[in-house]
Image 1: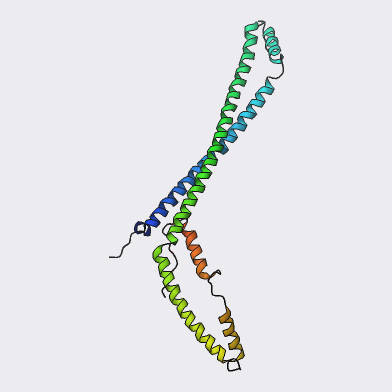
Image 2: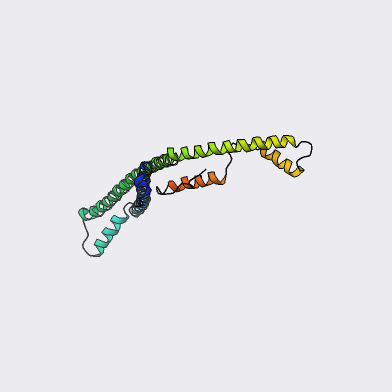
Length: 227
């Protein structure tokens, strides 16, 4: 019966990768919440600052409120005493004190939220690095590397045989036995650098597969590479 289990259940390296991807996703969610909290704390901090500034302006004029209260009481035919006049001043100071306390709390909360967000950013960076390490382990699977190495070794041996044959034939065609265009083509082939260090469609396919592994532990690697 065909094994229909996910690749990550059959491959320990992919299982670690799946766990690392999940941890990174959790770290990113935590960072998003921390950043949202930091923005909200910043807004509340400025609201408290604005409220405090407005309240200080309202009670800044010395004597104005007291005079207004006393004039009003005289107009009502019942001049008020010191206790009544002092009450309005106490209430104003109490309001300022309450808003100052509110401002102080939001200022501290803002700073703590900013620090928490930076810590979450570091957590995301560490989680991403863990995912990359796990993805590298999947790509560097010993069986895959051995198969590619065996294929390359066999192909290199075949290339060497064909190059040596062409080199012999090319050497015998120095007096025009080979048509000019064909001779030039063989020369280009014999002098071409076959290190495999240049970018090719194969390296692009592996690069794309690695990028896919960074977000999906089930992502497939390029073909079977049969010799």
